[in-house]
Figure (cartoon, rainbow, N blue to C red):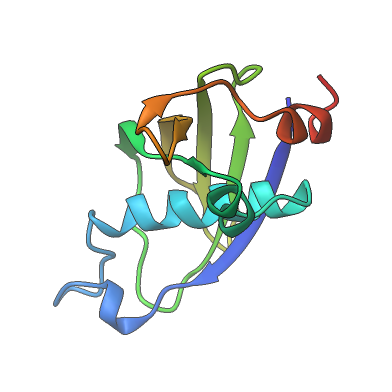
Amino acid sequence: MKKSSTKTRIRYSETDQMGVVYHGNYAQFFEMGRTEWLRSLGVTYKDMEISGIMLPVISLKCNFIKSALYDDMLTIHTFLKKKPMVKIEFDYEIKNQNNELICTGNSVLAFMNSENMKPTRCPDYLLKALEY
C-alpha cells in the first residue's frame, strides 16, 4: 500500500470562534494529501487533466476524534486502499504535532474522460508509477 505524508499548519481563517478547525476544512486537508500522494509518484492533477483525465470525488467520509486547533501542525497521512481500476480509493489519518489522532477518513474518486465525461480506466502511467 502506497503512503505519503503532508504537513500543514492551521491558519486562523480555518477555525471558528473557539479556535477549533471548522469541519468543512477536512475535505481540503484530504485533497492536500491526495495531491501530494500523486506528486510523490511523479504525477500531478494538472498533468492528468492535460492528458484528458479528471478525478471527481464520488464518496467522502470523515470520522472526527479530537479537535484540531489554531496553529496546530497537522500531518496528513494518505494511503492507497487498493489497486485503482475505474475508481481510486484513499484512506487518511490526520495527526497533530503531539502525534495524537485527530481524524480518519476515506475518499473514492472516479477516473473520468474529460472529452465525453464517461468513466474510464486508471491511466497506464499511474499504474506504472504504482508498479502494478
